[in-house]
Image (cartoon, rainbow, N blue to C red; front, side, top):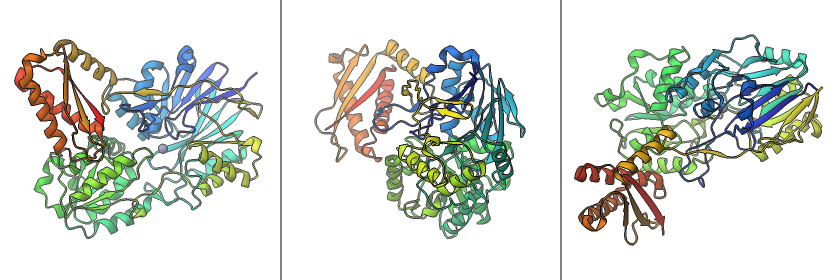
Length: 550
Ligand SMILES: [Zn+2]
């Protein structure tokens, strides 16, 4: 029985964490390897990755991996997943996708066999894989056509049909039409914006927005974007330079992605107008534009530090303007709004999508474009991906309107196996998947963090500070408790303990950020107390803060 199995390990029902397996005759092809974002209940968890237990005893069957585009929920799982899979297979992608993927792996010192996707089909084991240009909110994105001798699947991951893309590379409609003519058995289709009825706006509309927003600003212009959205960066730079402003890039993700895209010729920067962050204080604010990381209000990002007056180079003043040319990823709203609040307190003019919807356009297709793509491809079966359940239900409504019978529209769960045999589709099997959480500090290496903590405990013990805080006011209510193990004999160290308590009180009092952002407050207390101990005793115990909400 020569059947093709499609197994989503992630990317269905929860928007992110994209990873799909294609299994045929004992060979496995992997599409994408993304991370997911934890919900607020997963305290201390930094990210989620797909559960690859299913692959553990099939490593030798993996013939290769193809990455569709450079978003984190499609590539950022690589540093965690590749070491478990071994890296003996090739990983294909477009130049920018691979550029971003390489940057991800470089931080971890992991090597991989990266190969550029050519414009013609490639062979990986029994799979023939063709690709075509597609437009999305990151440049150089691709859709895939995955074939076995019996079956053709259109892998229509994140897309919109942008007719005026910033780089002029429109979706390859001819190739889509040609594949429609040859026949598609199953089409996977990005369903995230299935509730939207109006054709999505072109990325290039942002130029007019930047023109309008930048023109009359008396001070600095500070723009924050998703750092992978190179076309938005390009438009911001072009408009800023047109208004006689120098441009500085601030923040690790922005600097790294800009460098990669520039090296590949996908971002064109007027070099003499680009300035180093260290030089910005010499420039008249009315001649300066800062493009800064932190559009999701991430704790410790350049933008949040600038907002709370803690950035070494970037200050925010009342005559400045801050533009959020972005949108909060679901789950990040609290952090984004808190950052907007903190920025607003500086007196600067802050623009974001709630007050001016033109500052952001979605990278995903509306129902019109989904229907267009389905009409061009005329697949026998359709599967909505990349959305939650209500997006899939809405997608089904649109598919029905095109004449698809319900038994040809398949709403899946992650782990649900799609068995495709002679054009027939069955979805009765499911493999069990767990939530795999990665717990570490920021983008740091989890293993290293854990090891460092253990090392510290072993040599210098640990100190725990228990701080009772009233949620409404953010003030300490009651007594701070200091507990230590293997650090100092507490009865002989009353003086030090009093100082630790005082330093904790001072830190809580000066905490200007979000009242309920305990993670940030905890880190600040730990930093202050540690430096106090280092100064007094020249020892480095592990310092932990426990905040108790009262
Ligand atoms: Zn995407």
